[in-house]
Length: 278
Image (tube, rainbow, N blue to C red):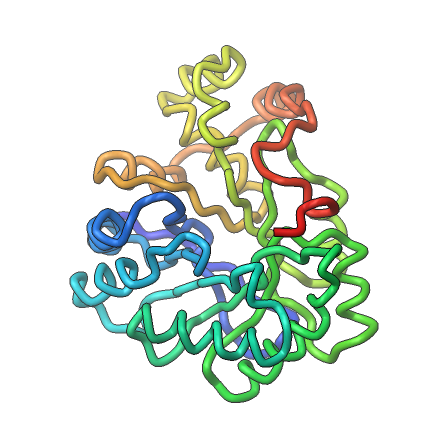
């Protein structure tokens, strides 16, 4: 079984940390999610990331129960769906997620998208502060927030997010958001860390992978690790789950990093957070 380091969460002063490599569970239905989660835990994953939007929280919970590991050894993240913004709606949605997961608490609860056109993320964050104060989640954070969205939270609420989960891969290194996060003690977590498969077959990455005797996925995950990102690659197969954790026995050199930097093209695989409104 492969294990991996955890990274401290800083802004909420609770002494907690998050596994650096977790399992992203977007895509599979409840049955597939249960199988993937149980297998992932068996091979060494301790971080599991889901969302109400993925419609598989029940399966994630089943996979956790099937794995038979002590709850306190796992780090479970879920996210608020976009049609549940608002103070009361967000609290009801959290209760629904917790019930579907079959857990007493989650480790991290995220606002999935800021939805600036809806303009309720500040009110929603105040509900998150209440959920945190009540001990129903151990930490609260955001997903897909731009610096301007975070600045409003800083100005109009009390608790800073511990983490901002953003689209991040070699084609979209998202430096401005990452630098803002770091300046404010907020961890960056990468979704779509492999560019939804766009990294595969890239000749630059193939050359680096061959050099290190690793796969392209391992090279890109290692790239995230060396930048102190939290990263949640998605897989449902045992061999790939094991492979994605096996990135701590090599390091990228300056030539490798320059090659990866050359792949930046600014192309998103998902929506633009400044434009997306659900």
